[in-house]
Image (cartoon, rainbow, N blue to C red; front, side, top):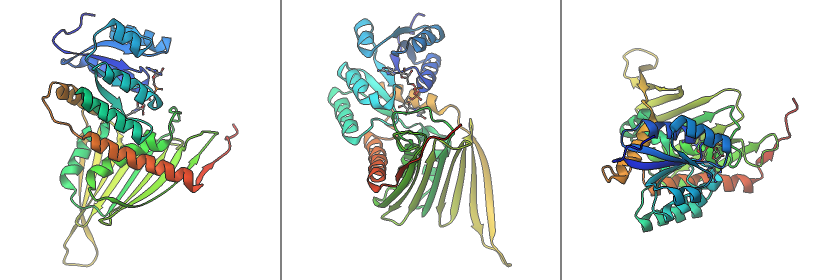
Length: 330
Ligand SMILES: NC(=O)c1ccc[n+]([C@@H]2O[C@H](COP(=O)([O-])OP(=O)(O)OC[C@H]3O[C@@H](n4cnc5c(N)ncnc54)[C@H](O)[C@@H]3O)[C@@H](O)[C@H]2O)c1
């Protein structure tokens, strides 16, 4: 395939579930040319070559030796993000690293420092920042007193990190985008199931110094998928249901003054078409490279989310409440 020559030459590193979404979006974007896919797995490379018509490579080094790449999405397993991203930044490549940016804060800080040193964009794939419903919350919510986030799935595919880095970090990032007050208190409990070395279920409660309480439940061993968020403040409560993709259902409850007995609540229901948040995320990445847009979410925001997520993990391990349940007999 002939690359669209005036456009950013991009690569996708890791052509699994998420990398294929990135590759498909880049292929369709007028401002990008997908020139390479890297994956050590031969079947993943064959799929990419046939599907996107780009060059495929076994390793980042082989790609860098063979072709010129300006930007790359890093969608390899999380435990490899630091090594892969370091190699790309050192070669002068702008990177979009899937969330979580790394498995610990020190590695994430190193990458942030390297991207600044090399003058390259580093964006973290916190896709929820590109959901219209989340953007609506950021505009409308001023001082929440209670937030409850549930993110449950029956999918145990990701093995290299636990459910806090895999799923809960999405909600941590949303909540930290709504509450600017510092964290005052943290509690967490969780379980590893079926011989897993990482937690598959985690429940956490964060109290902020302004009094707001945020409760999180994340599971990748749930019988069914659920992704919901409730945000309550004095004069209104938002209830979001993200599990209706490509739509998010939003209900806004507002108490109404009433002359008679009983509580009167006015409910506004909205269905928001999310219009491919991944495409918006990648368009934003490309626009940042062209210096046409300033970041939606900074590296400090990414570090804040990772810091809280890894703090929960450390407390969970230290607490002894990280119970390991035996394999389920089938
Ligand atoms: N933003 C989101 O909503 C979202 C959703 C799912 C996954 N993710 C993130 O995307 C990343 C990948 O997750 P996934 O679900 O696609 O996993 P996956 O296991 O489906 O895919 C990972 C791919 O990376 C390849 N790989 C392994 N080592 C590699 C290397 N050294 N270089 C290049 N490729 C290599 C594997 O062969 C595999 O094809 C993870 O960090 C995950 O947290 C983000």
